[in-house]
Length: 164
Length: 112
Image (cartoon, rainbow over all chains, first blue to last red; front, top):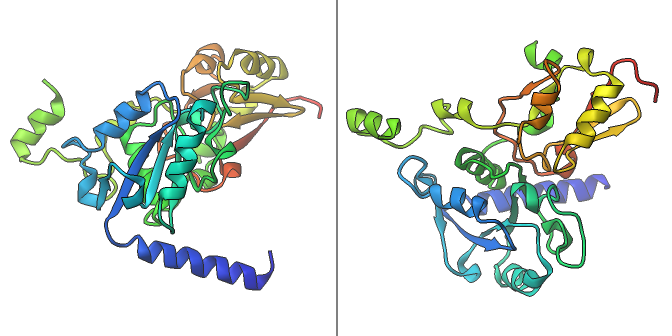
């Protein structure tokens, strides 16, 4: 990537972040998930996590959504639904792949599933976990709108370095 | 009765302070493993890679590859590794780039 492209990309990211400074509507798309992820997503609206205090709201239609929360291993049967939801979401949009299935962990590609959401639509933020806890989802949503840094890049998952 | 409800009734606030303050229940969450490279032998690495039900662990020469995105935090590797693995205790795992989720853990005494 050239310097100019990098500057453009940075400006675009900044613009998207400032656009998402207002409250943000999210739409969940299930692509064959076992519903554990949905159960955790539902808990986000419960009093203990209360994602509305952070300016996130669920919306029943992708046309009103800024962010798609995609769960499941992208079964081929839901291809059309996922692509339609993606196309119906107005720009700028953020796609968040949620859970180990959506990230390509649990199912490998075969005649029934793609194995990862990335194979169908471009993914911006990945939230690992099986299922990701509501706290992990909150952090992922805040990373998606640029209000928190993605911490995982700096972690090594080595005990000798974690101790120091 | 849920403890958070009791606490909420006492303080009149049930909502977590996250992300401004750490949430006390975060320590109870299942988390991906962290490995001790000094105790990770080639045999153990192979065994863990075979054991992992979601294919998050893979051996590549002298490193053990941990795909945090694929890890379901089932804890089988922690149980099998003795002291060589522990829960990392990290739940804030959201990543913007898939490469951020791929971790390389060196294996003791392995030849590449």
